[in-house]
Image (cartoon, rainbow, N blue to C red; front, top):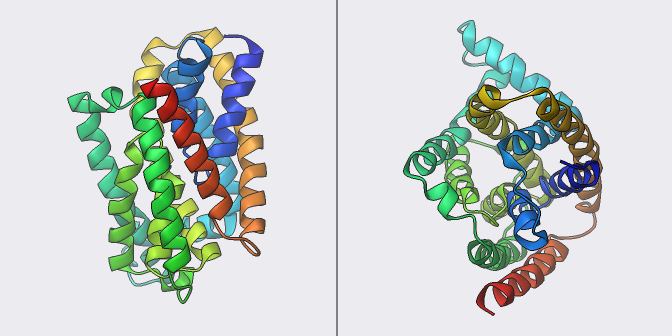
Length: 267
């Protein structure tokens, strides 16, 4: 794979992973619209690892609490604040893992990788995000996150398995619908991405390792580094912008892209 192709994939993944515009949808579109061969699972895993590093670094204080919570759980300290937070993250991740395994076993995950599916998901879930953002209250903060909300957001997150939906977008939609402020809703959504990305990388990585070679390893390392840089930039920018603007600019982008993709698909 050429260096330019690697950089394009890594930057696209990095910029779109945490913005509510669907990174997987954009990655699928690259080979479909450019005629380039599909990058394969190795690169997909690599760029996800890169973005994982970015979100861990950006939210390191929260990640430390979650890690301490996991340790507390293992040592029987279930009532600490950290243990409660870690438990909520785990619970919120379970639905998407189960749904992901079902789709992979049945083969539906590959069947959904089409321009039509991505276009409709971009359009429909962009509109859903708009109404949730405009109508949702902003009375809750991240410290108010509870078991019921973790379950609801976890169920919403399963919709992200549809290419074009956006994992961050659908969990932010859920958070806004539940009444969390834009910043705190985005924070919870980003933290929910950590165990989800880890689970996805482990699932796909098991297959990649068996077929990996030295060139693939080099390409993957390059992709991971550039995805990390791009993701850290995009995440920092979005969290700063949320202090002053809504999610409407992302919604407009989704609608425009969705309409264009549907026009391409049906023409």
